[in-house]
Each structure stands twice: as structure tokens, then as C-alpha cells.
Image 1: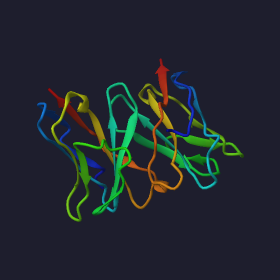
Image 2: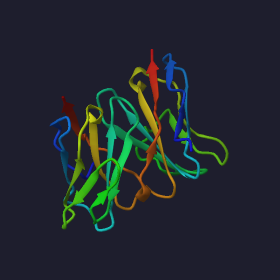
Image 3: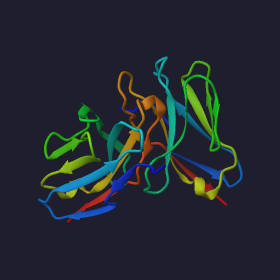
Image 4: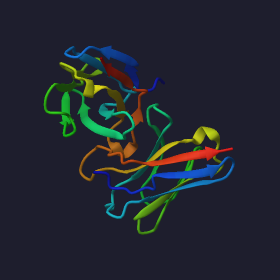
Length: 114
Length: 110
């Protein structure tokens, strides 16, 4: 039973490029959550998705960031025109039905913008 | 904002019990208390969660006070590998998101 899979583990992008981060939830999990962790800081909630729906995007920056969780395939967090301040670890978590069951986190994608 | 308050850091001798406190005085009746930990820069690891009753699993025990305004995570025999940041979390009422606070940095020493 594979856990939450995130790829790539490390991603380097030049300023202005696009970054695409992928997250495959655990089998049977239909809820996906994205968090960002800046260096030496705590985890900040970004967005909560169910299949084909964005449920809560209150933590997403208003510009350049978007997320999707299509009917088929992984959830994608997309960052357009990356800037140095986007350098962080991005963690994805999944849960079976609701947060009452707790989340399972992936190992994260470390984005470095040069 | 996180609904929990934790001490920023604690030390524990290897082999001893580590007792990590958490205050959640504004918790609602149907909100669970969750504990996660993050070792270095790895993904957060689920430890335990509970509603009213004390809980125990292979990793830890969770003691919740009768009024539910605070709880304690107990690692019965801490090892060096338990050195991590421990997060106590209460789900935001009416939502499915868990808001992480600053946690407690537990240092287990030999």
C-alpha cells in the first residue's frame, strides 16, 4: 500500500519559469491538501481539493498559483513565473473522507528558484 | 491561526518518557486533537489523534483532560530518533483543514 507519492523530490527552476508539482494520494483517498513550508518556518495550508473540485483555496496566493485534482491522475500544484520567494518545500497530504481521519503526508517537493 | 499553544522547545533524556503539553482552550465539542511530528525536513508524520478519551497506539499515548482544554502527548521511552518538531493541531471548525502552529522542538539527548 504505497503512501502519498510526490514528484519530483527536488525541482530547480529559473526565475520566470513554471513549476509543476505532482501528488498521487494514497489508494482510496479522495481528499488532497497542499502545504508550503518556507525555510525555518512552519507548514502553511494552501489548498484543499476533492476530485475535480477545489474545496478551500484560502491559503493560495492570489496570483501565479493554481491547483487541480482531475478525475484521473495526480493532483497538480502549478506555479507560474516563479520568483526566488517561491523557494520552499511543498507537501501534499491525503485523507480518505474528511480530516477527522487525519492526513497522510508525502515526502515533499523541494523547489529552488535560481 | 492555529488554535493550540505549545512550548517552543523541550529536552528529554534517552529512555525516559517525554511528555509534551498542548493547550486548546477554545476547542469545540466535536473537534479532534491531532499530533504530528516532523523529523528534520521530512514530511510530517501522523502520531495519534483523539476526541474525548485517552488514546494509545504503538507510537504514543494521548491524554486529554476532562474539560478538553488541554492534552499531553506521551512518548513512553524516548529515543534519539524521536528528536523532531511535534505539532498539536485542532481542526478548524466547519472545515477540513488542519492548521499547523509552531510546534514543540523536542531534543532527545543520550
